Each structure stands twice: as C-alpha cells, then as structure tokens.
Image (cartoon, rainbow, N blue to C red; front, top):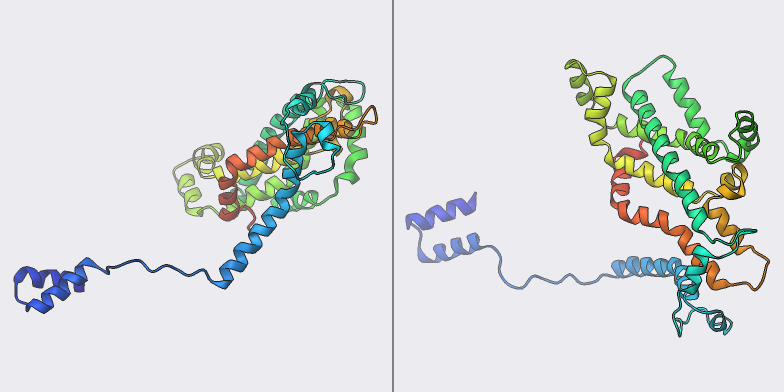
Length: 319
C-alpha cells in the first residue's frame, strides 16, 4: 500500500523534505470543497415527470379532503379546489354515526366493525394455511405435488363471478349463507391460490442448505417450519398480509352477495350512503365516508410498506 510506505518513510526520516510533504498529502487525502453535482437534464425530466404524476394522483384526494371539511352552503358555490372558509367536522361525524344506509341510520360504524370481524380471521387463516402449503410444496416433495400446485395456479386466475352461484348453493346447504362465518370461508378460499404461490416461490428461494442441515440434525416438518422458515419469512408474511387486508377490506361483491344487511361490510355501507335517494345529496358526507372506508388499508400499507418492498424483492414473485 502506498500510504503505508509513505508513512514508514516519514517515520524513518529517510526521504527529502519535498517527498515528505507529498507523502503527508497522500495520507491526508484530497482537500478542498466537495464538487457540487450539477442537475442534469435527465434528472430534471425524471423528477419533473414523477412530480406531475404524483400531483395528478393526489388531486382527487385533495378535493375529497377539502370537500369533506366544508358545509353544504359553501359546496354549492362550486369552487371544489378552494380550501374551506370555515372548517367543520360535522360531515365526518355524520358519516361515522348517523348517515342513513337504507333503513338504518347508524352510519359506517356498524359496517366498520363487520369489516374488522371479516378481515382479521380471513387474513390470519388464509395466510397460515397458504404458508404451510407453500412450505410443503417448496421443501417436501410429495406424490401429486405438481398436480396440486397446478390446480392452485389455475384457481388463482378463475374469475370470481363464475364461482358465485355454486358457492351460494354450498353455503345454503351447510347453513352458513348470509352469515359472517360463510363470508370468512369464502375470502379464505379465494385468497389461498395466490398466497400459496407467493409462499412457495419465497421458500424455494431460501438457501437449501439450511433445510438439509436441519434434516440431518433430525428436525421434522413442523420444527423446520417454526424454527427456521418462519423467522426468515417476515417480508413475505407482510406482503401476504397487505394483499389480503387490502383485497378483503375493499371487497364489495362478496359482501353484498353472501351476507345480510345487518352483516354488511363497510364498503357496502358506503355504497348505500352514496347512492341514497332520500333527501338532499350531501357531498361532504359522501367524501368523508369514502375517506373513512379507505383509511384502514392505507394505514396498513404505509406502516409496513418497506417490508412489502423487501418481500417482493426477496423473491415473492420469482418463478
């Protein structure tokens, strides 16, 4: 290394003065002001495009928030982009607790708790079963595994509308049609194929030596799953959670088909509020109700978004 040689030369005192100065400069490194990187035309184009696209997608949200904070007399003035002259939270309170959704006038509160009771068990059960399926398909090859995996892949791309009527018949015959339990079963089943695919591809991308070493040490199916696979799989579990929470919470079709009015999820309640034909159309209440309905999946994504990206990059969609 030239730095070490220069240091030794200085310490030994065998170099001329000029060479000592040069050696000291080598040890100190470059000096002076760090050059500023000019903003290139390419960077201007890239960042400018990103800013325009971001503003384009944020504009509807801005309009919704501003409208939800206005009273109806101010909304009738017609300037939807102007901030509220007098902020009011009455539309939010009404959307949550007293807006009419058909015969009931208890707002979104009942639908919110129905959505929670639907989303939480559906997400937990589907992720638990799919993770075990993906782990078995990736590491424990059994007879018929390829056929089973093919059926799951085909099931992931079957349109939901094709299966609605047969599922209605099945749930009616077992006495679960119109109940929250029946809807939870439906969401669990329909989330299984794509989640199994994600977990199988993720587990297949983990080092195979870990699995083999555990097998040599005498570890069995469940020991390897709980002590080796699960601690290494947090990113893919976050990916699966975000996909399930977003899909189940935002679902409208299954909620309106497989449940009764007292069990309607939040999205169905929102539809009933927005499409109500009784009285004056309250746009501020509609906007507040829409934001309240979409708040939960947005919160989940923003809290765990970095782990979501890690899960995707670590093999969630690799073949």
